Image 1 (cartoon, helix red, strand yellow):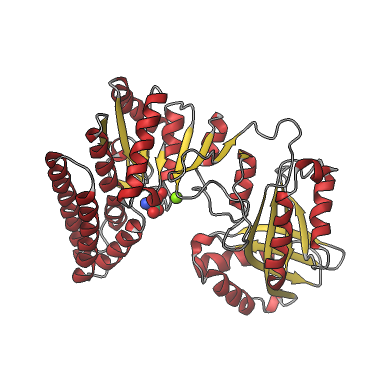
Image 2 (cartoon, protein in one colour; image 1 turned 30 degrees about the horizontal axis):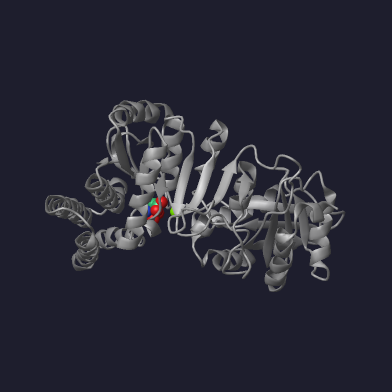
Length: 467
Ligand code: ASP
Ligand code: MG
């Protein structure tokens, strides 16, 4: 069971977390807890590391002081015995004290081993949370033990976005955790962090605690993974865009992958594949409403002809048009090169369409590149499309994706989507090769309206959808 940052930040939330763990501990033979940092703490730590790199001593010390106060204030309000509380306070001080040392090292030598120093700094949040949860469990007569994943999640040395090395990791996971589980201990494990095989601290990328849970699950051949958060489950669309977004009761792993690929910010992008391959089901549930079912994700859903439109996503991207047709190698290279230079990342060319004398190509920029990336990219491309590529024009576009199993075998589902768009101009259309997605490119000014119309189809019952 993985508990996200929004579920561990207040006494009320932590009380819920503990009662959930106590309840599930009775139901399952073996239970492993993975915890994130308190909400906002990783952002603050990243800022601290940044200030340390700039040798802004006052800046990073101020941030660390704020983090310390926040954790101590939380601990003060928790129902803990005197000894647990004072041990916990000592642990918190020690962790932050050691971390300040690393900040200092970074500020003195910003260019020496900065990757590992930064990862050591930004991974402290998880180490603080796990100690708090473990203490609360012990207070409730469960043998909770805080465990740092640096002891067994072995990764490569891509600091900030490290990749776990599975065989080594699984061997160590079993070696460390099995004996604990055999002794009825509930390990409370730091999400997000790992270490190289020679012990240098690493992190798994933002939102990486999801990934930690998924790696542990496959190493230990778990029955299920439960992700606890503060929302009711995966939503049919972004609730900030459409008012009547609702929880999706169940989804296949393919559907979840498509949703994530086409812009829904749901789970850590690399966590899904291992679970899908090992056929381990996943639940997403709300800690504040544990009796609600949440969302269930597995390989074998959508049995008994329940194919339906389940979700609609929207992402913004850049479209390239040319009144010519022909090979796309040159232009694709230009796009990739520009992306690499402007925002230091790869783009996904999502949709390409050609006719006798027109070409359209559409790509998105990963949201991780930041809010300005799209705009920057558009400007950079416009100025580079001279000379050899002057036939090309850049325009902003929006890509709407409809997610639902059976979109390829039931053309009536597609027909419904197109009918719903009615008078909205479609710039390009692509049926995903995954059997469960359909993407439609529209002008940005039509996007909100189109999204609402498509999303309305998610509340149509399956029989209505196909009849
Ligand atoms: N605390 C880390 C982050 O904010 C990892 C996580 O929350 O999953 O990215
Ligand atoms: Mg997350």
